[in-house]
Image 1 (tube, rainbow, N blue to C red):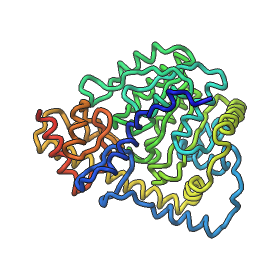
Image 2: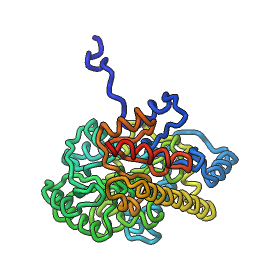
Image 3: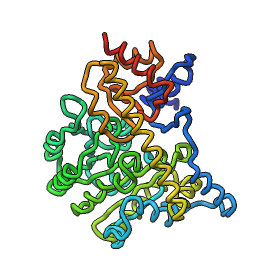
Image 4: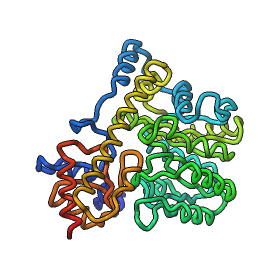
Length: 401
């Protein structure tokens, strides 16, 4: 029997990675890729962190076995991940209420989370912020979930509309799943403050909602511990929830696909029971995780000196992102571009959303070789002294007509 005819029709390119392919084939030397969420330094290269190199040397010298890992990965890795989510001595960890499984990146964690929820009989509805990371909707739809959205931005597109978000979440059915971004919201860079996170927790308790927290940029906002404040607030509310961590960005381990799914349950017994179902989801998907990237993360986080070095390296990346964001806003304001750009200065993480329409995005790419995604999401980490002026000049031309 032949493949279904529909399967032979070319699929649309990925909205982000597809642009990267187009960028690579663009012959213009002046082209600028601000579409993909990858940290680069002033030279435009993604660096290998010195702490990562040191950890790899230790791993190589130890010459350990290359046999299969347990389905959920190494226990020491899981404990190291939880040390990033919760401070030492936090009740969640001392009570054994959290369990962690290693996954192939944050995307793998999200998919395992979806499979786990569906196979354990949870409601099929998940609520996503509007806007959100473009891969979220298709990931959960293909997993078999019904996707709904809650409002996130106000009419200016520059600030959070907490009232509208909370009002919509109050309409969710008990048991519905709601996805939040822990910090450095993608694509907007706009995060709830502590008071809003507490209100979110209260609504989740009132409506019996199950949060999934996507944590892809820990350390790129205000700091390693500071960016995890939302996790602690949800825990204080008494919720059960899931956290999907990615270490692509803060360890610059993009190619290694290192992530984790952590489940916070009501008690240790429920946590361990949840892990048995997570093992089934993993076994049916990719059987067990790859070793190398997670071993790097584990080695760094479990060695106090290496961990201190890594935290300094993350602080350096964070400072560069903040500096780029400020320089971008300064350049936009100096060019007298129409619009209120100042709110972008106070946003966090790698992304800013410019609020462009499809034709403006297309013109940036077609006429100026400036690649952005969606409604004008730019990766502010991608700015350098060489390309910032070109990007602002291109925006001036596009927004002038």
